[in-house]
Image (tube, rainbow, N blue to C red):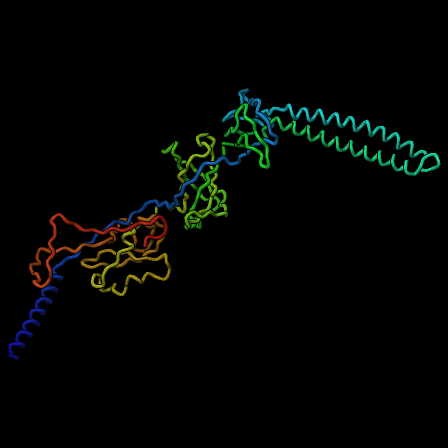
Length: 415
């Protein structure tokens, strides 16, 4: 009984050894096929994408400081009625508010001033006579003081009436709305016959852009990208009105008053652009690209090659001391791998900017056309006829193939 148990155990151990040897033999019968890509030489443009709005560089909001009905609009430099797109000069009459009430106020204030001047004349004569007599038996002291008081009061009333008249005239002048600057009317917010009501905030009647030949693009930039934006930086953008045309600009300023929407912090960046052609209209939506770097004629390595690393047994023996982590302390250092016979060997490189799919690189052994490994695929060789009966067999489709894929980023190094 015990002997039969020992024989059974020995048989099991022999079968395990046979399976191990068979598995090793099967593994040694496999050849590794690597996916490779060439190192190319070319240009690498790194950009940050964002969306903005085309805005006039300087806008003046013209309002009304008095209430009343709009009677008529003025004429632009071409003699046409002021409207959208009218070119106006500084001082051009834009609109006229009905001034009947304000003209009446001027007339009333003028009459009050005349009356005050007449009373002042009388008080002045009385005070002059009182000064000649002085406080004496002919003129009581109380009367003397009364003449002086009347004179001072009359003088103050003249000043008050003059101020009232000046205010009435100013309000009358406000009935004529004039352009404070030379520019183009981009918005008219009132119609003839409409009554404007003046309050603490003056109602807006016209919006005037001082110079549409210079425009700005107000771009909303995410906080993760704002560190790569700086004054004077080159910018390109397109608008839906001209989808095939690329416009150029430069960063003017970064506004520090950030906004938060759904826990996302964004900053407004002002981009200055030339609009001598007049193609850019105010408030067009712009698709903006900030140029972070623009490298010319550099070596480009696929990011998949930077992510791939071999197993130790795949590395040529003289290079097996180079591991995936042995890439130097500098984050700008990396390793790519190339085939050396049946094995692979490392090539140390220095990394530059990346556009998410390829990275600028340099190194003593890095040359244009060099085949670097981006992935691998194990396949059964024709002379391997040994199979392991203890290893589960995977049924494969004849048309099946495998490869390697990788995700890409927008900026940074493809590691």
